[in-house]
Image (cartoon, rainbow, N blue to C red; front, side, top):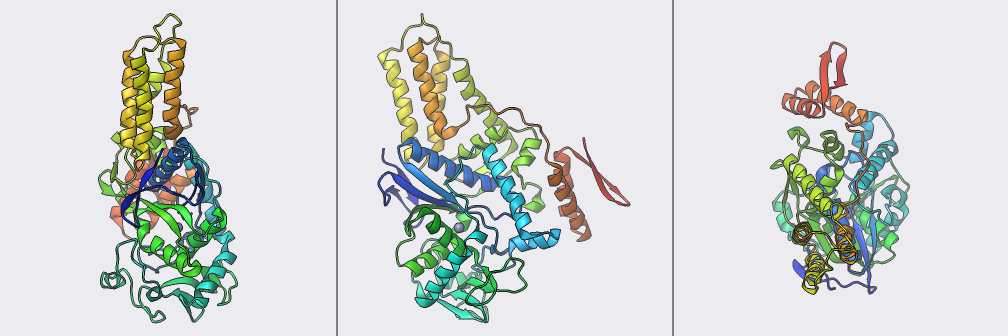
Length: 476
Ligand SMILES: [Zn+2]
């Protein structure tokens, strides 16, 4: 079956075509491991899991790689180039090694990912393990006249790459006028961005032809994708809409400038998710991790269902009522399969009835093949649920047909299997971190933020007491 998907670069629905027939080489920008991933990050991850599972259901072999950013991602990542390294900020604040910070959040990411039933990628390369390849690509960019060196820093010169801005619909002039890039004394143009920063004070540093320092965030993906997938032109590159500029714009410029071939045949971007009607923010008290939701008694499978129930390109509003509703939907699907009565004496499926089940299965595949329209696909699932619930017992062949139908649905949804009950409650380390964050907000006299954090703790069932020796907490 043909798959059509919305390519962000050409802004059009296109039939999926890959370099090697039947094989999709897919790269997803992964987490920067300085904080726990939040529920908005997991929307993207669940969306790409649906993409991968859909392609596999339709007969493709998917080679999926997702990177882990453990160096070089700067705090002001909505500009081409600015701020401090996020890993270093956390490491310095906690007085620990950046690698220890990375390991903690990598473990946490995988635990959450598995709870959300996101299948394993083929590889999760870490930026710190691919620095030689980044240096090699930067050397090529310098040699080809796309990059220049100033005082140990290497910058990509956007003027040498006329397509810069095509993906995000920005012109370089508009970026400057919109102040998303700022003039810098070393840069030939304000939109030029760093490929390498020489910085002997950086906690993570490597030798390079330009001095000891660290790579920029964008160059990491240009290198790890190609090294792990073994091709200079990927089939499919995914990310969030916040990656369009600057991250993916920079990835394209570096990859194509350095290698002279298109970087990816297709670009997919998921829309943002609001939480309780607002943009998620630490200070708004709506910055939820999976642990927070589990602590409130929600089943990760319900969270998965909710995140996939809205097509990836549609905006989504995540609410607690929504998770509760998702749980009810999961229970309805499970109930249809669990309560199906098999009776050798029951009448076999009439041809028309069998045809209806076939049409639902076909409709499910067709909905997903049309730009991964999960909400339309779920419509077919619930048509099947109603038909099964409305019928009396099934003969063995009919029961087998219905189970196979739901088996097909579940290859993408993955909600039928029940988890063993999990002990509720956020881990102590997560609560400690929130308490420490609130203390910090109080010290900074940011009382709105301190109150929001207190409310968060209260929602997690934590009783907080401020004593002369500092805050103490217990579980309710
Ligand atoms: Zn990336």
